[in-house]
Amino acid sequence: LNMNITIVLPWYDYNLPSGGILNMYGYAERLACKGHKITILYDCGKGKGKLKIPNIITYNKRRKKTISKKKLYKKKNITEIAVYSINDKTVPDGDFVIATALITVGGVNGLSKCKGKKVYFIQGFENWGISDREVYKTYELGMINIAVSSWLYNIVKEHTFNSAYYLPNAVDDDFGCDNAIEERNNIIIGFMYVPIKSKGTYDVLESIEIIHRKYPTIKFEAFGVYSVNDELPKYVRYTYNPTRVQLRDLYNRCSIFVTASWLEGFGLTAAESMKCGCCLVTTDSKGIRDFSFDCKTALICKPRDVKGLTKKIEMAINENDRRIEIANAGVKIIENFNWDKNVSQLEKILKDNL
Image (cartoon, rainbow, N blue to C red; front, side, top):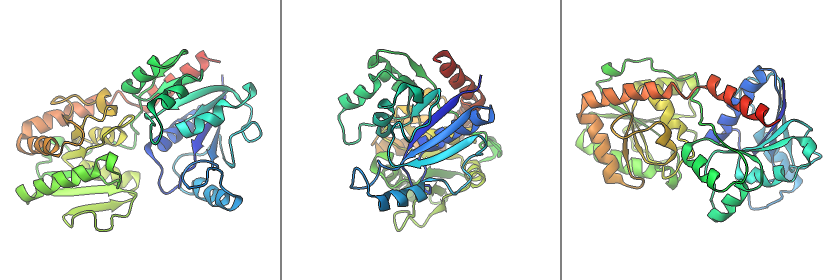
């Protein structure tokens, strides 16, 4: 049974797709390959910018920067539309319409029944600039709620009167362990550069400065979609906006990968690094709890704890057997987070609710 599914994404600059955007592209591509008709709607009337409702000039600029010029996914059976607002005139009739971020929930909730049953794909606890209670209210709207991690699922379950589903993120098939973990003896430490405090980048930078002074032969690599200016030290090799192949190679060069986010919906970068054979050193950002267990599949400290983060990195450096054991366990556990399994589960959730 093929379905007509509309996926509503917030406006974004196609040069800076978030993990949540890429996750929905992953579902769109694979559902389309299975014969479902997918429409991706970009809500260019909301998002970044001072004006709540942009004028036509702003809208046109957003529209041009939102429809992806890059081949982020295969586009067979997929239609992309950038719209001024989400309403019954801009959204096609279908079986399901999916809100993918809190900013898209209001528009989707206001649609008539002919647009499809309403789904809320919850990819983070989006209390940025609003109260927790306002977030909880979006879970109480009567939509089909799907959460990408167990900690989010437990919150949603407490604040909804209808069905809630747990569907953790998948890690792309693009990633895998090419370089033997046991042979990564020349320590290279990797991390992602995101110039946002809550992503923990500055905690990582503070920690690696201590490590660099204490272990001057250790190398460091970082990647990201942001220009670094003078924020990264000279001893860090930076790969700007890497391709999937470049990113896989980078992960495989690293023996240790560090993430220090304060809060994550899932923690996709951490999972990708594990799949490629890195020993993950991470903060307990909640989203990582589905695949990261301290001293078993990762080394974990509290968020915003630079001393604790440094201590865990040193543990990975100095205890080689432990690093290898943790990295191997990480590769194994991430095998459970795959696209075939996820798409089948999502199809079942939708078909059960038709």
